Amino acid sequence: MKQNRVETIMQDNKVIYKRDYDVPIDMVFEAWSSSEHLSQWWGPDGFTITTKSLNFSKGGIWEYVMHGPDGHHYKNKVQFLDIKKPHYIYLTMLGDGEGAKDVDFQSRILFEEAGEGTSLTMEQIFPSKEELERVNKKYGAIEGGKQHLGNLGKYLETLE
Image (cartoon, rainbow, N blue to C red):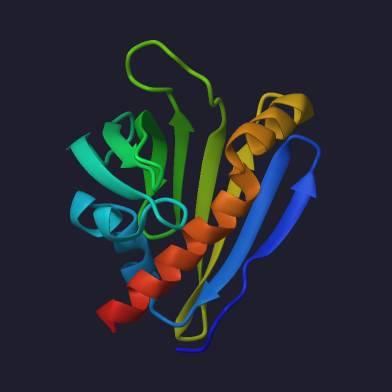
């Protein structure tokens, strides 16, 4: 598989990541839709996850814990706003599932056929430019997003 770089575009309160993968669209979509796949690649470099529950459907909830390389555990809760297989997944971050919501953004993950491969666009939309800057400063969100899609690429290589 050729190495594909992540293109990153900043637009006010939005970060757009674009990356091509040399695998069919159904395979890329599937990697986003089950805890078995997500546990193999989700998150930035050095992180692992444990899924508590996953209801991959419109309105469904995914609860998971990200285990950081520093030993910290980060509870997360995501709601799927809309899903159209294999074209898109829209989701929103709900915080830690216990009322704390330090990170507030929605993501739109768009999948497009590109020859025999797939072109993926992931948009992270924050309530404001200031919130995007705060989350990026505190968590390294933009670099994390790039690593996230890089880890997906490494995982997809193992499926070929």
